[in-house]
Every structure is written in structure tokens, then in C-alpha cells.
Length: 225
Image (cartoon, rainbow, N blue to C red):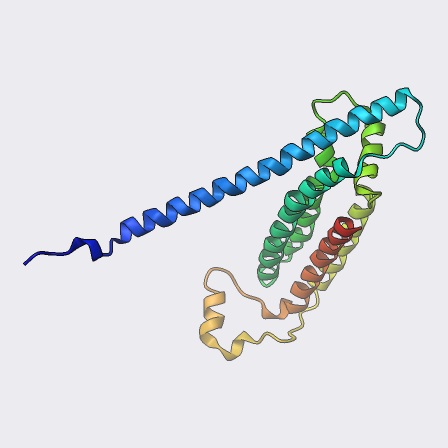
């Protein structure tokens, strides 16, 4: 009796095919990202060249070309902004969970501020203009021409400080609102397996999430302004 191996399912081969397809997709995404990045770099190079020429010719009302501006903002919004939103949501989830264990969960608000600062237009411009000899005032001028005027770092920092103080104050108000794990002993034991779970920190957890949402909202306003 002959065995027909052609219909035999090989899980290792199937996994290998899936892994290969995943790698190809990742390489394709990297290629697309590199394309956006190259266009953004070209746009910035063109913009700086035109701006320097405008300064030599003493052009007062200089504006970058819409094509160069679009190439830069498209890359920034597609990758830098989107990375912020992804990581900010992850931080928000972690902050919400840890709020039921420790008051140090307010650090999640600070973490989102640092993330916002790291992926800001200022850092973007410094990163891509690193090879150019350009004054700080000119860099700020070009940034405003590309993205428009945004909230400065000090204003965002003050908002973060206020939100952090409010959230920290709420950590002293132990109020249960919706969550009542005591009704489910198994869940209560599971949540307190490694560290005491404090369900009355619910208001504190919601305040932390609200504070992070405010910082995310500021980023949304910047993105679509």
C-alpha cells in the first residue's frame, strides 16, 4: 500500500511559510517607510536651500512649496505621530492596571509627557537637520512654517504637572465605583496573587486615564491643526 505524502499536513512547513510571509510583509513595510523618509529628507533639503536663497535675496514673505511641506508632514504624521499614539495607549493600559496597586502609577502621566517630548516636532527637526549648519532661530522658523505654531514645551510641562498633582491627590480618595472584585473571590485572589489589589483605587485609576487622555488630545490637536 502506497502512502500519499502530497496531502500530508506538515505543521513545521506551514509555520515556515507563515514566518516567511511575515518577514516579507515586514520588509515591504520597511521599504515603504524608507520611501516616505527619503521624500521627507528631500523635502527638507529643498526647503533649506530655498530658505537660504530667500534670505540672500531678502525675501520677507517666504513660504515653502506645498509639495515639500506635504512630504515632510506626511512622514511625520504617519510614523512619528502614530508611534506616539501606539505607545501612549500601551502606557495608559499599564497605568490603569498599576493604579490599583500603587500610587506610583502617576508616573504613567509623566511617561506620556516624556514620550510626547521625544517624538515632538522639535526633536524631528533636530534629527533631520543634524547635517545642516543652521541656527536655532532658523530651525524654529522652519518648524513653524511646516507644522504651524504649537504649544511650547513649558506649557505642556505645566499641564502635565497639574494633571499629575490632581491624580496624586485622587490617590487618597478610596472610592469604589463600578469594580467590586470581592463578589468574585477567585478573581480577587488572582489579582492579589503577587501584590495587594486595591479596588477602592478606582477613582485614582480613572483620573490617571483622564490625565493621559488630555495629553493624547493635545497631540491630536497638534496633528490635525
